[in-house]
Image (spheres, rainbow, N blue to C red):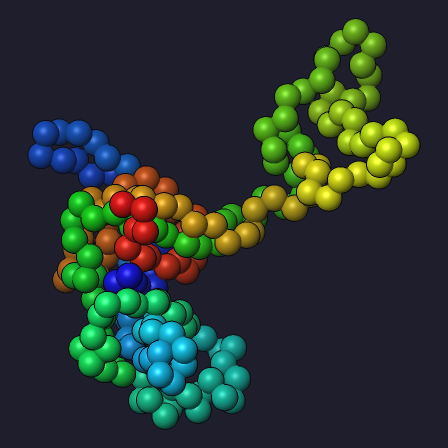
Length: 210
């Protein structure tokens, strides 16, 4: 697997293709990606590249501050990307990784934290159907139906779809197409939507199923 990038979701827009087709896209800023560590199979048990995306943060502890000072890189958020069949000697700590490692038309997988919706009922959270609006139903229009059995097993199964916290979980959307790349400004335009709110951090990796 090739190396990926840490990005920041900048918002959605649309682009017009040469044939006039309007394509909805998400703009992802990938500026400030630097190699902060190289993991090898001999030393760490696996091959990976650790990236740091430069960002302003006041939440760094002492060990993190010393780590970035040691490698002489501006502090930022960290992420690892597994690599295989690739020569680690081509990477050096401090190298700046830009958007041109991807190509227009390439498919990628994007991981991020979805928008938090708070406490939600089963209709919104799991797309349940409503119960009768009449015919004697006066209190359970948007409630779920039976959630258990009788004496056997006499309990509610684990994993039962019920109301609760919706969103604010890590999601990965696969096989999204890169429509355009602005190498000068380090912005990647990806067809469709990606997880998270504007300004949230996401990870872009080459697709594993294409």
